[in-house]
Image (cartoon, one colour):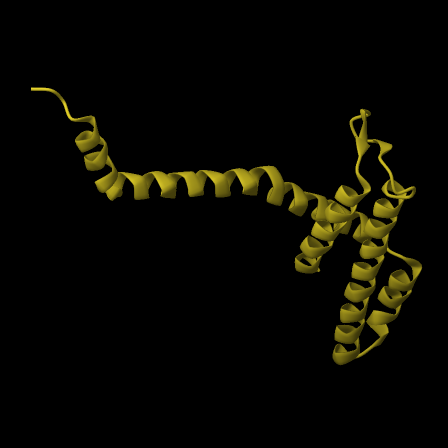
Length: 141
């Protein structure tokens, strides 16, 4: 008896458990790849930018921190909130300056990466990177 290929294919397509499992595995793999290749890098860059701001705070933050011990508990809390806000704004300005330096002439320009290689970057990509970093920084402060 000859094998009916249409019947075999229809039978395979009718069994959805395998298909559902395959789609679940694909979405899980895709989610993990996006997390590893993009989200973690964005979070790491935002964390590094915050650490840099905390390590080298603007003079206003240094002054507020010096005043804080002379205030009551409520005043110290307000100073803490204010310094966090100032550090956040300082960090955003730093990110914005980095984006501006990459996107300064509106065309593809050469930018040197931290490993010393030079490659052309699209200014729009730099703006998107800055925006993503800004969104990640909101969570860091």
